[in-house]
Image: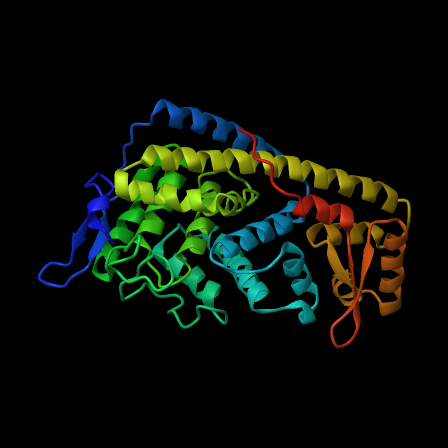
Length: 389
């Protein structure tokens, strides 16, 4: 790492390990600032992000069955966050891997692990503060049994790491996070900022600073980005800015991946906290607006299907809710959830197919298992993002 690129600022500075002649340069963050003078640009971005988040918050409180939307949105977030780190999978593959073992592979397994880690984090955070203990438990779940399981799941790193091109060394790396001996102090400060004195700041500013500092500390050998992004929703829910995990910022970060990394690095190199916070707040605004639009579309489809289904004395209304949560089904996946006979389940699926709600994808795998998907629902869940200035 080229130490001359890094200014000495309130956020940190470049240094070397003392007493070692051949020691490489690394970045040592300072404790997170508890007071921050916000520029007019950041204040404007904060106002827009707050308004958009308020609309999403209001929508979340009106949804009668939140799990219908949480499922699809968590999968979008899990997939995008994993893809930022190099996982190769599509949303349809993630959904299909959940209802048919023949559709599973290493990439969908990583996304599934992220989902498990997310659910665990929300469960723990319902009764515990956001602490190092919580983070370690979630990290262990994230990496267990998938790529990265050899990189100390559930443990803070005990060796240096660096970020750069493939084959980079500490000398050629773009960024070398603090050495292991600094982690205890830095993480203790991070924890205090999240749970105590950081609360004097607006929740979204606190979330942006929290994420920046976590990524800069880089406490794990692997999984730092995924854990750091997961913590954003966790903090906003804890601060009562989100009733449900309906904000999926990783989609914005994936679309703007280069800028995401550049904005984080610019704080370290030039103390450009304004650039990072403006970018972060724009991500919140854009994704909150998108989530509101997407939610309304999904709710509209569900209501339309329900109005048709309720005319029949069958499990058709329950099938509608199943395909909103996961628009891909097999006979077995529906049968297991509704506890119906095989024949009854097939008739139910055929009924939905005749109505145009489901479309066959043909047979797959060794057993020739047929899969169906709900085209109208999946189109809404998977539709591209639109980011308006």
